[in-house]
Image: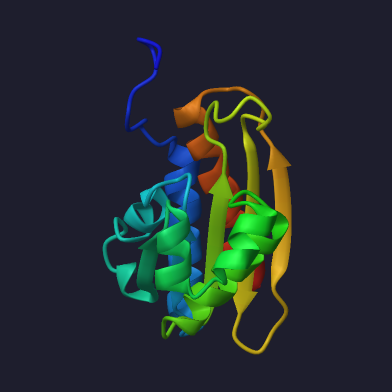
Length: 170
């Protein structure tokens, strides 16, 4: 980690504004939210509980960094995680669906990716997202943020996750 990169980066104002918008819309439409996070390590869940008066829209969050956590908490098949690897379309979709199944939420967003350098063959900044809604289709989104550092990748991923919640609430 470089000296200029902090462990818990400050969140830009636009992210807090977006979180407020998501939570207010969820409250207005009487829908609840869940998260399944890997590379963001619970940052999204934390953000969704920070907005006073609206945090009741957040039902629960799962921080599933390891293969075991993804399988045990979200019900992913071990063979899927091992075959596709944790950072993949298949796993992001399964994480979102698993968070929905393991909660009472109406919408679940999942984030899995490489916030920084991993193995030599892994792409820093590659992040997959899944967004599942009760009675609806599960969406997938793939982003290539580049080698911008762990903190910056997490912030960029939070921004996309909030956009997915907004789209699902529309």
